[in-house]
Length: 110
Length: 119
Image (cartoon, rainbow over all chains, first blue to last red):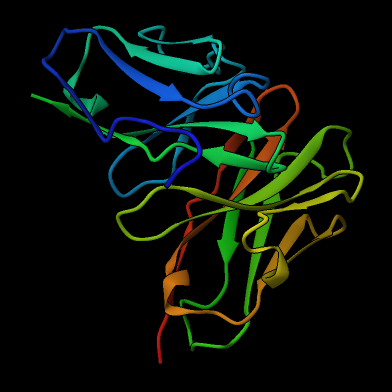
Protein backbone atom coordinates (compact mmCIF):
# COMPACT_ATOMS: atom_id res chain seq x y z
CA UNK A 1 0.00 0.00 0.00
CA UNK A 2 1.65 3.23 -1.18
CA UNK A 3 1.84 6.23 1.12
CA UNK A 4 0.96 8.32 -1.90
CA UNK A 5 -2.14 7.28 -3.81
CA UNK A 6 -2.79 7.35 -7.54
CA UNK A 7 -5.70 5.86 -9.51
CA UNK A 8 -4.53 2.67 -11.26
CA UNK A 9 -5.77 3.76 -14.65
CA UNK A 10 -6.69 6.81 -16.67
CA UNK A 11 -7.98 6.85 -20.22
CA UNK A 12 -8.76 9.34 -22.91
CA UNK A 13 -9.15 9.81 -26.63
CA UNK A 14 -6.68 11.56 -28.94
CA UNK A 15 -6.81 15.32 -28.56
CA UNK A 16 -8.49 15.15 -25.18
CA UNK A 17 -7.19 16.54 -21.90
CA UNK A 18 -6.63 14.04 -19.11
CA UNK A 19 -5.72 14.57 -15.48
CA UNK A 20 -3.82 12.31 -13.12
CA UNK A 21 -4.31 12.74 -9.41
CA UNK A 22 -1.81 12.09 -6.64
CA UNK A 23 -2.95 12.17 -3.02
CA UNK A 24 -0.63 12.23 -0.04
CA UNK A 25 -0.36 13.71 3.41
CA UNK A 26 1.09 16.64 5.30
CA UNK A 27 4.43 14.86 5.69
CA UNK A 28 5.01 14.39 1.97
CA UNK A 29 3.03 16.31 -0.65
CA UNK A 30 1.77 18.80 1.92
CA UNK A 31 5.26 19.98 2.81
CA UNK A 32 7.51 19.08 -0.12
CA UNK A 33 7.75 19.35 -3.86
CA UNK A 34 6.03 16.87 -6.14
CA UNK A 35 7.69 15.23 -9.12
CA UNK A 36 6.09 13.39 -12.01
CA UNK A 37 7.64 10.64 -14.13
CA UNK A 38 6.58 9.03 -17.38
CA UNK A 39 7.51 5.42 -17.99
CA UNK A 40 6.95 4.23 -21.54
CA UNK A 41 6.61 0.45 -21.96
CA UNK A 42 9.91 -1.33 -21.45
CA UNK A 43 11.89 1.82 -20.67
CA UNK A 44 13.24 3.67 -17.68
CA UNK A 45 11.19 6.45 -16.10
CA UNK A 46 11.69 9.98 -17.39
CA UNK A 47 11.26 13.18 -15.41
CA UNK A 48 8.22 15.12 -16.65
CA UNK A 49 7.59 17.68 -13.92
CA UNK A 50 9.77 18.85 -11.04
CA UNK A 51 9.03 21.16 -8.13
CA UNK A 52 5.25 20.77 -8.62
CA UNK A 53 4.91 22.58 -11.91
CA UNK A 54 8.28 22.97 -13.65
CA UNK A 55 9.04 21.24 -16.93
CA UNK A 56 12.56 20.11 -17.80
CA UNK A 57 13.81 21.28 -21.15
CA UNK A 58 12.47 19.09 -23.92
CA UNK A 59 9.20 18.24 -22.20
CA UNK A 60 6.30 19.60 -24.29
CA UNK A 61 4.05 22.22 -22.74
CA UNK A 62 1.17 19.79 -23.22
CA UNK A 63 2.30 18.44 -19.85
CA UNK A 64 1.58 20.54 -16.78
CA UNK A 65 1.64 20.00 -13.05
CA UNK A 66 -0.01 21.59 -10.06
CA UNK A 67 -0.28 21.12 -6.32
CA UNK A 68 -2.83 22.09 -3.72
CA UNK A 69 -2.51 21.10 -0.09
CA UNK A 70 -1.79 17.39 0.14
CA UNK A 71 -2.73 16.60 -3.46
CA UNK A 72 -1.11 17.12 -6.81
CA UNK A 73 -2.18 16.74 -10.41
CA UNK A 74 -0.60 16.13 -13.77
CA UNK A 75 -2.49 17.21 -16.86
CA UNK A 76 -1.86 16.20 -20.43
CA UNK A 77 -3.59 18.21 -23.11
CA UNK A 78 -3.86 17.30 -26.77
CA UNK A 79 -3.54 13.62 -25.92
CA UNK A 80 -1.52 11.51 -28.36
CA UNK A 81 -1.19 7.76 -28.77
CA UNK A 82 2.51 8.00 -27.88
CA UNK A 83 1.53 9.30 -24.44
CA UNK A 84 0.43 5.78 -23.48
CA UNK A 85 2.60 5.00 -20.49
CA UNK A 86 2.66 4.66 -16.74
CA UNK A 87 2.80 7.91 -14.79
CA UNK A 88 4.21 8.14 -11.28
CA UNK A 89 4.21 10.95 -8.75
CA UNK A 90 6.87 11.21 -6.06
CA UNK A 91 7.72 13.36 -3.06
CA UNK A 92 10.05 13.34 -0.07
CA UNK A 93 8.36 12.23 3.13
CA UNK A 94 9.57 14.07 6.23
CA UNK A 95 8.18 11.50 8.66
CA UNK A 96 9.58 8.45 6.89
CA UNK A 97 12.78 10.21 5.75
CA UNK A 98 12.40 8.57 2.38
CA UNK A 99 11.26 9.35 -1.11
CA UNK A 100 7.78 7.96 -1.69
CA UNK A 101 6.29 7.05 -5.03
CA UNK A 102 2.66 6.67 -5.89
CA UNK A 103 1.51 3.32 -7.19
CA UNK A 104 1.40 4.69 -10.72
CA UNK A 105 -1.42 5.35 -13.17
CA UNK A 106 -1.55 3.57 -16.50
CA UNK A 107 -2.71 5.83 -19.31
CA UNK A 108 -4.66 4.23 -22.12
CA UNK A 109 -5.31 6.26 -25.26
CA UNK A 110 -8.51 4.89 -26.74
CA UNK B 1 25.09 15.23 -21.24
CA UNK B 2 24.34 13.24 -18.10
CA UNK B 3 24.32 9.46 -18.36
CA UNK B 4 24.13 6.70 -15.80
CA UNK B 5 24.54 2.98 -16.31
CA UNK B 6 23.89 0.15 -13.89
CA UNK B 7 25.92 -3.03 -13.83
CA UNK B 8 25.90 -6.19 -11.78
CA UNK B 9 24.74 -9.80 -11.78
CA UNK B 10 21.53 -10.76 -13.49
CA UNK B 11 21.00 -13.81 -11.31
CA UNK B 12 21.50 -14.07 -7.57
CA UNK B 13 20.79 -17.03 -5.32
CA UNK B 14 18.63 -16.62 -2.22
CA UNK B 15 20.56 -15.46 0.87
CA UNK B 16 23.41 -14.09 -1.27
CA UNK B 17 24.53 -10.47 -1.33
CA UNK B 18 23.81 -8.32 -4.37
CA UNK B 19 26.34 -5.71 -5.45
CA UNK B 20 25.29 -3.17 -8.08
CA UNK B 21 27.45 -0.45 -9.57
CA UNK B 22 26.23 2.80 -11.09
CA UNK B 23 28.76 4.43 -13.41
CA UNK B 24 27.89 7.97 -14.36
CA UNK B 25 29.18 10.83 -16.48
CA UNK B 26 28.31 14.44 -17.11
CA UNK B 27 28.33 15.52 -13.47
CA UNK B 28 30.41 15.22 -10.33
CA UNK B 29 29.44 13.81 -6.96
CA UNK B 30 31.69 16.41 -5.38
CA UNK B 31 29.39 19.25 -6.45
CA UNK B 32 27.23 20.70 -3.70
CA UNK B 33 23.60 19.58 -3.90
CA UNK B 34 24.26 16.52 -6.03
CA UNK B 35 23.36 12.94 -5.21
CA UNK B 36 22.91 9.51 -6.76
CA UNK B 37 20.10 7.20 -5.76
CA UNK B 38 18.81 3.70 -6.36
CA UNK B 39 15.23 2.75 -7.15
CA UNK B 40 13.81 -0.66 -8.02
CA UNK B 41 10.74 -1.94 -9.80
CA UNK B 42 9.50 -5.53 -9.42
CA UNK B 43 7.94 -6.95 -12.58
CA UNK B 44 4.58 -5.28 -13.23
CA UNK B 45 4.77 -3.24 -10.04
CA UNK B 46 5.46 0.30 -8.91
CA UNK B 47 8.73 2.10 -8.30
CA UNK B 48 10.34 1.76 -4.87
CA UNK B 49 13.06 4.10 -3.64
CA UNK B 50 15.96 2.32 -1.96
CA UNK B 51 18.81 4.63 -1.08
CA UNK B 52 20.66 7.81 -1.93
CA UNK B 53 24.14 9.19 -1.34
CA UNK B 54 24.96 12.91 -1.52
CA UNK B 55 28.00 14.98 -2.37
CA UNK B 56 28.85 15.40 1.31
CA UNK B 57 28.65 11.60 1.89
CA UNK B 58 25.28 11.88 3.62
CA UNK B 59 23.45 8.61 3.10
CA UNK B 60 19.73 7.90 3.28
CA UNK B 61 18.03 4.53 3.18
CA UNK B 62 14.53 3.16 2.84
CA UNK B 63 13.48 2.41 6.44
CA UNK B 64 12.06 -0.97 5.46
CA UNK B 65 15.35 -2.09 3.87
CA UNK B 66 17.89 -0.12 5.86
CA UNK B 67 19.32 -3.15 7.66
CA UNK B 68 20.16 -4.81 4.34
CA UNK B 69 21.47 -1.86 2.30
CA UNK B 70 24.80 -0.08 2.03
CA UNK B 71 25.52 2.71 -0.43
CA UNK B 72 28.99 4.05 -1.13
CA UNK B 73 30.65 6.32 -3.66
CA UNK B 74 33.97 6.50 -5.45
CA UNK B 75 34.25 10.01 -6.81
CA UNK B 76 37.52 9.26 -8.61
CA UNK B 77 35.76 6.61 -10.68
CA UNK B 78 32.37 8.38 -10.91
CA UNK B 79 30.72 5.33 -9.41
CA UNK B 80 28.15 4.57 -6.74
CA UNK B 81 27.81 1.06 -5.36
CA UNK B 82 24.76 -0.43 -3.69
CA UNK B 83 24.95 -3.66 -1.75
CA UNK B 84 21.90 -5.55 -0.56
CA UNK B 85 22.38 -8.50 1.73
CA UNK B 86 20.31 -11.61 2.21
CA UNK B 87 18.49 -11.48 -1.11
CA UNK B 88 15.00 -13.01 -1.35
CA UNK B 89 12.99 -13.98 -4.42
CA UNK B 90 10.79 -10.94 -3.75
CA UNK B 91 13.82 -8.75 -4.41
CA UNK B 92 13.60 -9.74 -8.07
CA UNK B 93 13.29 -6.43 -9.90
CA UNK B 94 14.79 -3.97 -12.31
CA UNK B 95 17.19 -1.74 -10.39
CA UNK B 96 17.72 1.84 -11.56
CA UNK B 97 20.22 4.45 -10.52
CA UNK B 98 19.27 8.09 -10.81
CA UNK B 99 21.02 11.43 -10.50
CA UNK B 100 19.73 13.95 -7.99
CA UNK B 101 20.00 17.72 -7.97
CA UNK B 102 18.46 19.91 -5.30
CA UNK B 103 16.92 22.09 -8.00
CA UNK B 104 15.33 19.34 -10.06
CA UNK B 105 15.09 16.28 -7.81
CA UNK B 106 15.70 12.82 -9.17
CA UNK B 107 16.11 13.72 -12.79
CA UNK B 108 18.17 11.47 -15.07
CA UNK B 109 17.74 7.71 -14.85
CA UNK B 110 19.92 4.88 -15.99
CA UNK B 111 18.52 2.21 -18.29
CA UNK B 112 18.12 -0.21 -15.40
CA UNK B 113 19.47 -3.67 -14.75
CA UNK B 114 17.29 -6.70 -14.13
CA UNK B 115 18.11 -8.90 -11.18
CA UNK B 116 16.47 -12.27 -10.62
CA UNK B 117 16.72 -14.01 -7.27
CA UNK B 118 16.41 -17.73 -7.73
CA UNK B 119 18.19 -20.95 -6.92
